[in-house]
Length: 250
Image (cartoon, rainbow, N blue to C red; front, side):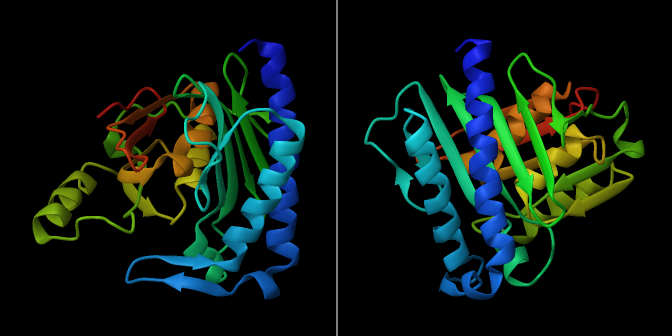
């Protein structure tokens, strides 16, 4: 894709993210209703409504197919360029009035995130970034941190709903935590990515999250001078991620 196309598409994504975020904020009383729950997961009316609004805009203003968290693929075989939508990343936070949740929209080209928009609607913060362009927060350029050692850094991580909670798995996680100055779990992969991109944290890593949670963040981290690695993609779109300031690569 050429740069002109990305400029056009990012404006479409920003418009869709802001429309969905405005609804999630202003209509929360009606949208914060559970439609599904399990031991480790919850879905709200908000997830469905926000996704419908985003898809309506993308389908009207763009010709690319869509992979969305709630409704899946808009066509059986996605083209080499397609949208990835997480209408509400941090649903459990939203449900409990923890202001760490957002709308996340990415554009993929040949399975690489080339454009990302993340709208932290509680704080009215819009993060964006695209291939060959600088990352921005509310139209101001952002850059990753210059921290070089885990012992001086902040790690953001999480436990996806299908995480291995065995003693052995959790012990391995704790041993990794011991290398870091501070560790944070905030319940939103997309916001964690933005924190790396804007130097609030130094590394975000997680195993078994989903592509719609992290695709937009990957584009923004790369545009901010960081390094976003998405590996081990499964058929159900689960992935492992390691997003860093590019100095800490453990």
